[in-house]
Length: 611
Image 1 (cartoon, rainbow, N blue to C red):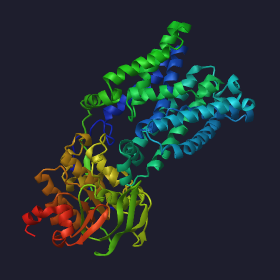
Image 2 (tube, rainbow, N blue to C red):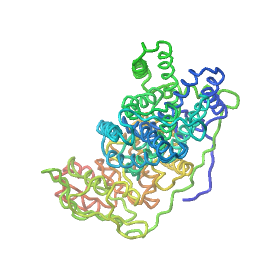
Image 3 (cartoon, one colour):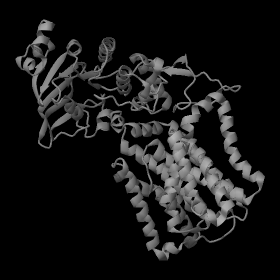
C-alpha cells in the first residue's frame, strides 16, 4: 500500500536496535576508531607493527564475513575457512598457470566460493544444532584432502609458492604499508557489507530465522532462501580476503588454507566482540590478536602454540563475565555517552501508515476449503477426515477438548504439517483457488497465524518484531516500519515499541503475536488460543481487537477454550473431538448439541449460559 506520511516525535532509538541511526558524534567516533587501525602502524614505521595490523585487518574482515552467517543467521559454520582457501588457491593458481592478475583472480575465486557455498548450504541448512556445524567441518576436511590429492595442480601437502612478481598488478610489494592499505580496504568492505545486511530486510529476516524458525515461516520467510543469500555474501567476502592473504603470505599449504583451528578462531572473535553486531568482530579481533602476536614477537620460538592459550583464556573470561560480548554488554552505555556529546541528541519523526490495505473479494465466498484431512503420527490419527470451509468476512470458532486435534488442524491449514491425505485450497489474490505446499507459501497467499505457545523474536524490540510481518508486503525498511507503527497503535503496543520482546508480560506477548501476523496484511487470520493465560481485562481487550480486525475485512479462525469469549465472537462454530468434526453451525445451536455437551461443554456450562 502507498500512503501519505503521518509524523510524530519519538524518543531516541535504542543503541542495540536494528533501526538505530548513527548520530554525528557516533559517526565521528567510529571513523576515528577505524582510522587508528591505519594510522598507528604507519606513524610508527615498524614493519612488525604493520604486520600485526595487517593480521588484525585480515582476521577482523574474516570474522565480519563469518558473522553474517554465524551471527545474524545463527548458523554455526565451523568449516568457513573452506571459502578462504578456495579464494586463496584460485587466485594463486590463476597467477601461476595463466598469468592472470590477482585483482581479477580474486573475483573468480569469490564466484567459485559462492557456488560451493550454495551447493553445500542447500542440503546442510536443513540440519539443526550441532549437525550443521559437523557437516561444515566435514566439507572443510573434504576440500583440504582434495587440495592434497591433486599434487600436480595444487602442489599437494608440499604447498604452493606464489610467483614473486613485484608491483600493484601482482599484489606483491616490498613495502609492507601497501599490504596494510589493501587489508584495511577489505576490512571496510566487509564491515560495510555487514552493516548494509544488518539494516536491510535480509538482516531482519536472518535475525528472525535465528530466533524462531517456525515464527519466521509464519511471517512468509523462506528460511533456506535467506540463509543461502547470507552464505553467498559471506563466502564471497571470505574468498576475497583469502585471495589477498595468499598474496601476502606468498606460500599456500592445505593445512593452513583449510584450517579448522582458524575457522574456530574467526568464530571466536565474533563471540568475544558480540555475535550479530557490526562492530563485535572487529573489537574481538583487536582485543585478542595483538596479545597473541606480541607474545610471539617477544618470546620467539618459545611461544609456539601460545596464541591458542591466549585465545582460549580470553574466550573463557568473556564467556563467564560478559556472555553478550563486548558490544552487547558495553555498547548501549557507550552510545548513550556519545549521544550526550554536543550534537549527539536526536529526535526522529515516526512515519505511521494511516491504514492497512483494503481487502478485495466478495463477502460470503469460500476463501479456504479443507477436505477430508487425515493426519497420522505413526499409529495415532490426529485428524480423521476433517473438512472445514471458511467464508470471507466471518469469524469461525473451533472448539473441543485438549488433544482433540485442533492445533493439528491449524498446522495443516497453515502449511506447517502436510496431511497424510486430503486437500487444502486457499483463494489467491487473483481469485483462483490455490493449494500451497509450504508454510511460507501459505503466508504469502494471505494465511497468517499465531501459535498456541507464543513465539516472539526475543532479541528484537516490539516494533522490529512487527516489522518482520510487515516485510511480507512492504520490502522497504521505512515502509515496513510505518506499517508496524500503525499496527502497534491498533493493538495497544505503541508505548512499548522499543522494549525487547523477551521482557513483555504474557498478555502483551499475545497481542504482539497478533500484531506481527496482522502486519503481514493477511486475508485469513488463524488465532491459536490468543486469550489463554490472560486476565479478564486483557481477554475483553482481545475480543474487541478480534472484532475490529474482522471489521477491516480479515477473515478469522480462532481456537479457544474460553467458551464465553468464543461463543460471543463467532459467527459459526466447529467442534472437534478425537480428530473428528462432531458438530458445526450457529453457536446457539451447537451448544445444545448432545454430542457436544457430552464430549466437551458439560451440563453445567449449558445451564449457566441459559441455553
